[in-house]
Image (tube, rainbow, N blue to C red; front, side, top):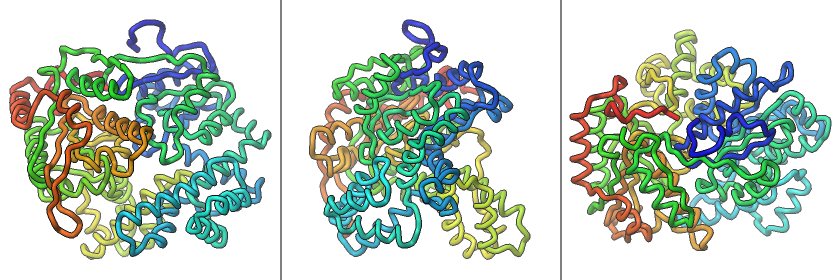
Length: 570
């Protein structure tokens, strides 16, 4: 791997390694090369455990490890999973040690969300959000440690949140787990010396992607799983999950004690100079001088693009984004375009606009049935069933084919089946409904076309172009952010969004929106709008001209971008 100075950290002889890799600086490549290096030190029958957080991040990491190691070495020596999947595996295998029933169905994220919804039904949006956050906070604090049910009960009683107490009491009465119960029980089990030793003998090394997203609880689980070799890669400036229990500063302090001074990467393999200028600009506002530089700055046509534009309304803004996406995909059909908002509510304008743009391939990341991996699984399952099969049979067959420990994929499949049911009822048969689903024959985690998503779900992904609509007050930063610490995290959310872009970043705002009651209201610009305008020299007309000029460039064979700008893909 290219670095400014010093040997490649992937091949460090140190047992424990900490690397800070800003967006696009080869974090996944480092992990893949590290896996190659560590294979030689494994004992017979040992494996490497690679841990990450989301399903898409897991797919990205799996693809890179598979490509680097080859199918045989990968299948024999590496396991890639999410933290909750690893925890579920531990609970199912050893839960009886703590009196837990290993046959208890493994939960998804929605298990708790559904329980909370009972106590927020009928409330206005603001009070509902506040109540939900209060319940989630009480339960999170009560379960962010190796606590048994009695200790959780006492912590909830001390919190004074009666809703959280009722939810936990009902969980115990029904005999189920909630999502975060998996982590606390896994943590408890790994504190049993004989159980921890089993995992340490099995896993000769552990690789952790995005260390800044870990809670202290997840850090303990990772450390207890392998005592021989631990590698942690991430970027504290992308720490945006404090609401989910992540403690970037605390985790980094402990990792520095274990691993020593971190190795730092500063060369970007992902983004154009124009995009990196925006990333560096935002980082400077966080009192961090990242000074990210492109590995091949002259390879990007016109140096890439960075634009800021203001529109009269959310509808006008969304229509303009559709037009630019049309221009890009007309010239480069295999381009990937991310339209990323801070929060889901602000995305309704672009969702509506792209729903009407039938000439464009678009995918909403909050709909499981629009996920290409889920669509492939659905279509393949329907194809193997008898023509008379019903939805119950489809559900049983599809879920039986998923690792029960893979709780995130299991939940995603359950959601896809629920969404498919409506389609099947309209189409009249499973086969007719499956025929309406679109499969993209691509081997990558991000398919060509338009992707509509929120900031947190886009973490770790990359797109040729990124549009960030809604750069207004109350949305960016989020209206609930009050303290300096909360505002700093909101600015890190901005950093995450802009750093998803490879060639071009376009940031927009609307001067008026429509309320839930159907009335227009004026917005105010984000407190960071002047900073963004300063970092983005192009306006709406210039970026449209830039896209037009790109069409005259020689085209890369994959038809995704102009020929010079396709980088190494790190």
